[in-house]
Length: 272
Ligand SMILES: C[S@@+](CC[C@H](N)C(=O)[O-])C[C@H]1O[C@@H](n2cnc3c(N)ncnc32)[C@H](O)[C@@H]1O
Image (tube, rainbow, N blue to C red; front, side, top):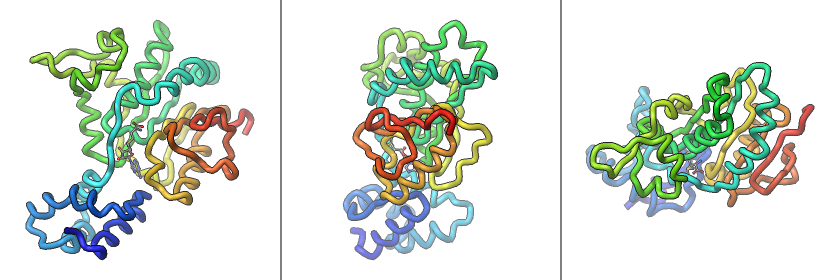
């Protein structure tokens, strides 16, 4: 079992590099890492962390992050956001980007792809026949390379697709041999740009975003980290742009520069 001292070292590392607070989650951290550590012949977690810190290629760190991030997500999660996007945010964004036909949407905790694919399907639906005249690619980023690999593959079980509208299933997925699994169509996949990105880093975007989704990730951050990320999101948005967080998450109302539309929907004021 992981000692308090080892937990402390792993927690401090994850917090400092990724903002992720592991705190007292000893059983979880142990459960996720023990097989890997044992398989590779390290005698304890300090030896493993020495290897992580020594490995200049970053491979061991990547593996650590893949084990310690929680990638839970599902299709149709918090559908009210997509509904709001369709009814309010997208009509606004379409008008705003009319001249360039370049609509910029970023999903910053894309995990295994369900959320960015939802966004892409909503965009497809919303633009309909006009779709081909627009650049509607969605930037999908996450810190976990394992989750991103799954997202890029775009293969889901019939059960995972269960709640999707039939029409979307038919249009955006193809059944794989055996009929138990489905894969997103190449057309939908091409609507996404996958990249690894750490939300702790400076946001590198040359152009401002119209809509940013950062749902169910800031729950792992402390208040100070959250405030910094929210400020970076604010700076990365077009005036009038929309920001969605998870419905069970909060941001500090007192300090946020955002206009609060609903507890999990925010807007940068026009003209800011
Ligand atoms: C619980 S999932 C949420 C997925 C999706 N947004 C949703 O709401 O269903 C949280 C994701 O945040 C990612 N994550 C955690 N810390 C991160 C960081 N510092 N930078 C980027 N992604 C991070 C994790 O890898 C994980 O895939």
